[in-house]
Image 1 (tube, helix red, strand yellow):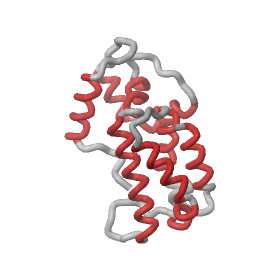
Image 2: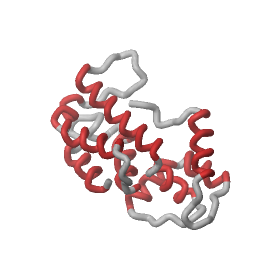
Image 3: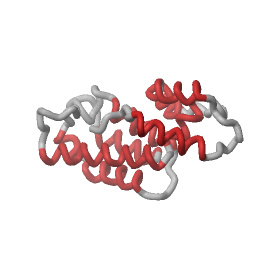
Length: 163
């Protein structure tokens, strides 16, 4: 999988694009709020998935905007495609990526491709679906990485429905 941690140039570029984009509410988030959005992204993913409404200018609002940004969507699509590739070719021991459950991905290949394709489309997506996917990708005990820990097909159908 691709690293969930962006490099400094990626952070700088993202901050530049977020600042250039006017917020719907007109409230510009402060730099501490933008930093909190990065540091506690997993917490905010769970809040977005739970349906918490972001208040303009807060870290949750910054995170919410990032979830639907084209850069985030492209990165998640690449991550899913890398997981599919790993399932096809097998795990190579000298890679920083965590080995995926190849059988689970092969069984769910159609729905995984649908999610990756939906993220790559230019049409808008809902932040809740992206947050759900990020939670699934980050859960090392989940169905993507461990057998017997749930159904990857069901989890990916849930992601697709939420997108």
